[in-house]
Amino acid sequence: MFEPLSTAFAKNPYPFYEDLRELDEPYFYNDADAYLLSRYCDVEAAARNPTLVRSLEAFMDPATINAQQRSRDWHDMPNHERFVQFSLLERDGATHFRLRVIVLRALSRRLVEQQRGMIQTYVDQLLDQLLQHRAFDFVTDLASHVPGHIIGHLLGVPDEDCPQLRIWSENIVQFFDAGRTPAHKLLAESATTEFYFYLSDLITDRRNKPKEDLISSLVAAQDADEMSESELISTCMLILAAGHGSTIDVLGSGMHALISHPGQMNLLRQQPGYIQKAVQEMFRFESPLPFFHRYASEALILTGRHYPKGTKFGLLYGSANRDPDQFPNADRFDITRHPNRHVAFGRGAHLCLGNHLSRLDMEVIFLSILRRTSHVELSGPDPTYKQSLSARGPESLPVVLTPK
Ligand code: HEM
Image 1: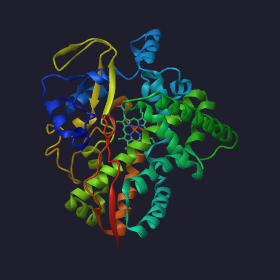
Image 2: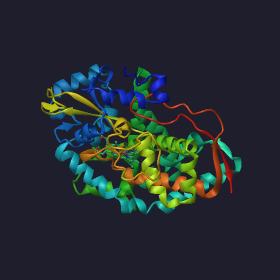
Image 3: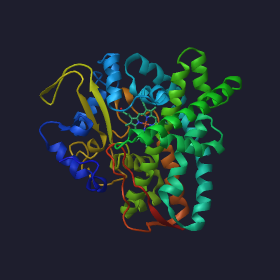
Image 4: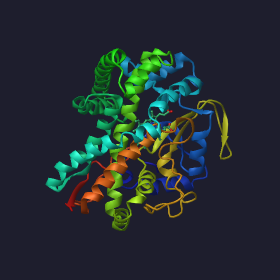
């Protein structure tokens, strides 16, 4: 009944999610070996439950973890294992908290807000070129250039190296997709290794000559013995990987939602003060990272049923965000929605550390487009969305913009 890799799901996953929410018990999805939590109240509570964890270490001995990594073909890729598979996202408890605090310091709302001018300049440059053509692909020509560039800039990577960051990030992350082959494995390991060497040089440089950037503040944390070099590298890789593809996806689906709801686009054009609410609604309406998992570190009872220690749960953030018990008219795209306590950035201990940054990227892009155009429309048929459970966004979005 639940086929998240089907074309029907890619086209419209929401009827599938609705079916799951109506079941008496969480559905067991074989391919992910996980019970799927789909209602807002269950997903939100699970994300906040400290006994539901991300790391296998919380309930499994090292030999069993090792065997499991081998059986899933996650082994024999030393740099990917060291830096990507065991990042702070996959930690719990004191280690996780220690690393999270360091990143929080560097990505606080205040510091992120200071990037607004830099983001605006970059977006203006892109739009100067694109508006000359009027017709372009919103995903490939605009959205896919922004997040990697901005995160690279924030990290302290020179502008000319930012395009390479995007390639590394995509090659590292593709190994998490279903249908992995030995070629994907080689690609992920070589991209991680190249990125590792690149970051090592950058770290040496900042150690000698600190600057006002994220790498310099992480280097200072390492020098103060707050984190190891391996944790430093891994955290840089996570920041790029976590924020790059997801922001591109929600930019694409957000633009698609505005185009498909001309009344909402007009309202935002006339009342740009709605931008923050509009962006939050874009995250709720098409959550770009709809699925994350947790393990039960101890036996628990959920919706009246007993689950043993080690049980894996899928938290369907994308389904929770369309639950009518939480959001009236949940399938309606409404940029004035209030309250809008969506879970697109998760909740609890692992709440997204990049949420201010990605929202700022979106605010700048949508405001700039609406300010500089009088009309935006699709130039082709409805877009095709990615076939995936863990990522949601259009593959491409051909648009025509009428400049003012
Ligand atoms: C479209 C944008 C984004 C979405 C929808 C998103 C979503 C999420 C979600 C749902 C989680 C929690 C995972 C869980 O529950 O297990 C998370 C964690 C995280 N995100 Fe984001 N994210 C976005 C952008 C970013 C950006 C731009 C950055 C960095 C600049 C970032 C950095 C992180 C980090 C470091 C974590 C791990 C936090 C932890 O484990 O404590 N994210 N993100």
